[in-house]
Length: 304
Image (cartoon, rainbow, N blue to C red):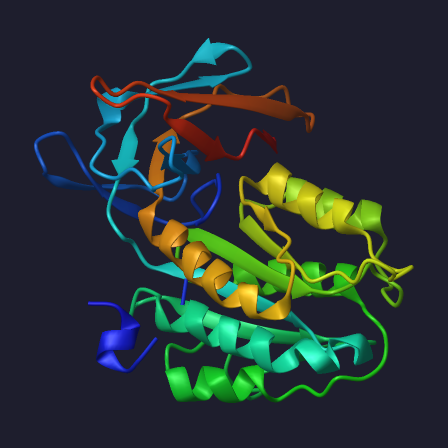
């Protein structure tokens, strides 16, 4: 049952090292626990067919995962609708005023289609980044409380997009769920952040969150920079959307919520590093007899 039918509430993830014990199932469906000192990489994967429908019901044997060209043994596999830690970043700059009702309705749809066990937070941003939830509350699963968080902002000022990404990634780290996601909705390029574009990209490359972006750009807006939204989504294994008009954000947010709930999680133990930080490249392939033209989307690299 989704949150719409329960009148309650949001929200895939990316690769990550487990910060604590992670419960999973073996091939015999026995539960086991990996101790927190065991290093794992978790990669959340979306699979679509030729009609862009999400493909569910695949098994571990359908996937091949390689790191830097070397096949890896998949030791964790989950194809269930697991809860997620989700941050919704909503642009509240002055230019968002005419689009605001559609954007907030779309964000509410995203929330209403979530797993009831998701933990969600809202950050509104213009010249500064502001938490939508009360100061004493980092996350919520209450639809009324999250709706209030969405509407707490007011369209004014400029766009501190990079600061919002940095703040969102920081708060994701405080979440309990291993799957972590940001959904970023904006109508312009950054013109107010203390962080730079390089800072934002670096933070995303060093995080294990999946980022979905929705860009509502006016054709004559000199501040529009859709490339950054595409880049942030791509490097994190998410997707960027650019609706032609604000009402289109509503079905887009429904689709994002559905993808988040349809993703697979693959886990493996990487080889020990040299002690120096470096980028490791991932490749995931899927082969399902009887199913053609399957498309995989996931994080393609991480830093170790």
